[in-house]
Figure 1 (cartoon, protein in one colour):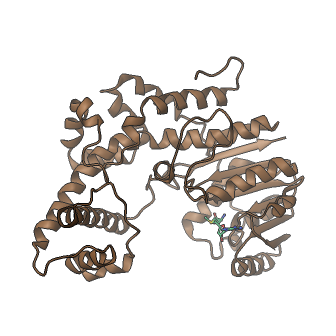
Figure 2 (cartoon, rainbow, N blue to C red; figure 1 turned 60 degrees about the vertical axis):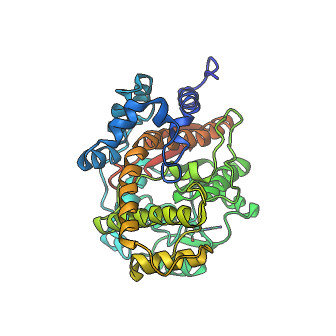
Length: 397
Ligand SMILES: C[S@@+](CC[C@H](N)C(=O)[O-])C[C@H]1O[C@@H](n2cnc3c(N)ncnc32)[C@H](O)[C@@H]1O
């Protein structure tokens, strides 16, 4: 469906993205982790051959750069060059204001930089602030100090509320904590007439914020969404009636698979975890005939220290797979690493669509707010190296 005439630029972008995503479902829905050769490998052998032949350095470069990924695939599928424009958003890299060193207490460095970037990008609050799912209320404390506005920080975890309260008292700021469940419809009353803010609120939590802000008449809203897949429902429930993509948790996860901020150690662990799990899929198929598409529950991280063979045996026991006393474990592990090499290359094609999907999801929220009468802007509040979840939805009455 094309954008109906007279629609806002955000709606036009939403429809254009939706059309491309619908047309290319075959490229982003099958996950190479579970599907040995996604169907597109047969229909686009040139692309598959090129992907599988990429050297490691090129795989790393492409995996870390959404625009480069699009340029890469557009050499094979020229229509996809349009995605470059569709994922381009204004960057609100305002110069940072050092509020007070005292505010940095107990805020990890990267979080402090995110708080500062978010706060500067949203500008002066229109009203008293309500911080949604605040944790210790770092953002709220920063806003109370920078703008001298009263801040209420809503958080479920009483221990975090108490810690946040102590930090606010120590800085002598007008910030109080409301220990409440954001998913309880009664919590929306705290939003009435307020400037609501939320830094990195997960799936259902930020949807409750958006719905609550509209229902109770929040004056303004600044939100950076994250973890779209953290929802009670296994199927995505769009916020606006024009949304036509059917998304499950796996696809919602795809929108946030970008790991720009992971350290070298985390990346090594992630690589090994993937290779071992792929090895286990081989083992399970060989011993029990179970196809790799069948998922298994997450594996406790602590099992890794057992070493490969014991890790596999433990997982097989949990999954009810009988393993013989003797098995060629080193060949199995090598096969896992070889599969991983293929998977990360084939996944590049899927990853072309992760930022478009994330922006489509953000626009679903934007359009809902526009329909409710807000002026809405979608922008990036910082570089993705600070956090890849750098989208900022700003709505004003
Ligand atoms: C991803 S953290 C973000 C915290 C903070 N905004 C930040 O960026 O540091 C999400 C926060 O939501 C809180 N939370 C989770 N479920 C909640 C609920 N149902 N109601 C209120 N807060 C909740 C968690 O305790 C956690 O502090």
